Length: 146
Length: 159
Image 1: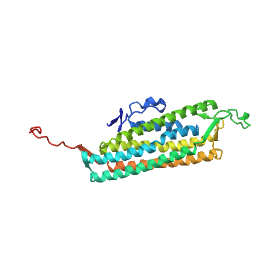
Image 2: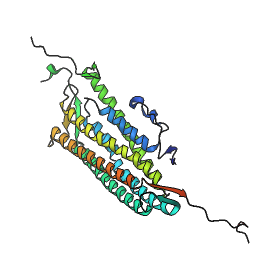
Image 3: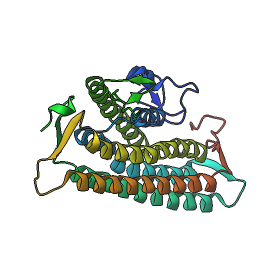
Image 4: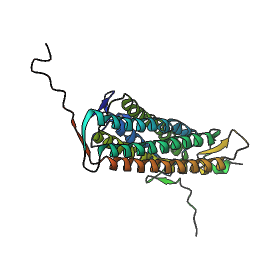
């Protein structure tokens, strides 16, 4: 397992903590797994009839749009690392010439990176769309409203 | 006789007062923001780790691309949901009243526009995930053995 800053890159534990267990539940999982579990938690937290006010969404998107910049970088680098592996390891391929498989995968990783970049741009646009929206506390007693 | 219920909407099997719902929205919102920070930290670490110029053999790329694919799957689902949540915030007068600081804009128009943009972001997440699936498929049959080191002469290369 590849390790970076104390966490793995390619594997995580099989058992997952409950979404409401808090950020401590992420202790010991790999980096991609941490990202996955965090987004899964957002999924769980927003999967209710409760509203998501614009200022909250603005902050969430402010963080998540980072995925649109960092993921493309990671995906392109992944393809480059894969290509480098051909000259370092004795690579075999059951399907075709290893170099052909790597070139195909590299092209698809770049394509995925482009899509992720577009995703990030859309999140930024959505953030701009709601940036002047706010809210005041509603009156809990409807009869008191004018 | 027809009666109209005045009870608070039931949520998770319990009727919550507006104040309780408002508190729940605040707590959940703060958690979402914190989790979004964690998510980006995870992806940033992947970007850093893959950026050091090390070779990445196919099995490792296969696994990592699989993990990132799952991230994209979840993202696709989140965008749709938060877009709906944003629109729901417009029709919760017992909780709060939404306003636009930019008086030219209409809150509901802006919310609908954001929902559309988020839905499109979700589609891109799914498209990126499909590309990762295909990339994994391309290298699924690939493996490696560590290349043998150059033979060292019997005298250890001295003399």
